[in-house]
Amino acid sequence: MVHTQGHAAQKENGETLNQHICMKPYSLYSFRQYKPLEGAKYFILPFILWLIAGGIVLGQEEERSVYMAVNKQHTAFKDLIFPYITHIGEGQVIIISLLLLLLIPKFRTGKFLLAMLVCNISPFLITQGIKALVNAPRPLKYYAEAAWINRVAGQPVNYDYSFPSGHSEGSFAFLCFLAILLPRKFYWLGTVLFLLGMSVLYSRIYLSQHFFADVFVGSTIGTLCCLISFSIINPFRDRDTQ
Image (cartoon, rainbow, N blue to C red; front, side, top):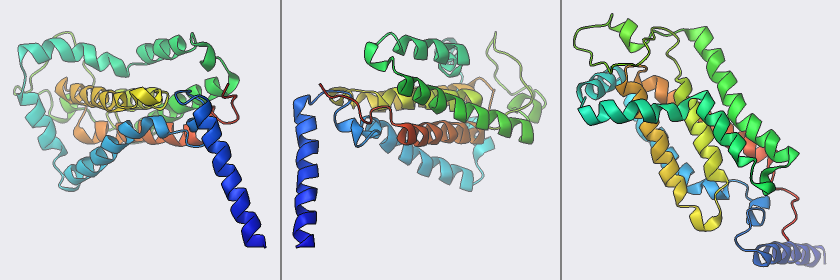
């Protein structure tokens, strides 16, 4: 009898979920009430591959070799485009972009604002804390500005607080947050956002601002903090699906 009642309750819950989804299949607040990270799956999958591949590189202690290989591949086109791409990870760009999200009425809620702040500020604080504790040298200091280093004109000259990369953390937290918000028919754009984030990581190495470990750990902190924070807060929960 108890088993039958449990089965009936399970069936009723399933039917309720289906009703919510069917009422508005492309609603941002329908299926995501129950699976808040559903929209980010095309960001999360390549990120998992990145964790595996990056971990292998670090395990083989090849991070200095990665910097040297990337630095040797300088071209006029890359020198032109990467100083712009690297701005995606800067605080001003991220803050302005997040504020623009609030122009959308459905995002103007206290819970969404809380999620937005925690998802982007928590990884920033963790990264800055690690930077202060470790104070690792950047490539220009590590190699004492060796003559073989290719440098792009106009780029800042930084020597300290290399690990982890703040631009990498910021860009991945921000882009992961955007991926979570994607409507169902645009889930595939999560992969585009991930690749955009990877271009920021490459730019940080290319511009001699960071080593591989810096960008790898930075991107990991940004993504994991965003996913965990959003799952806990879940501004989609208990929203009206009308």
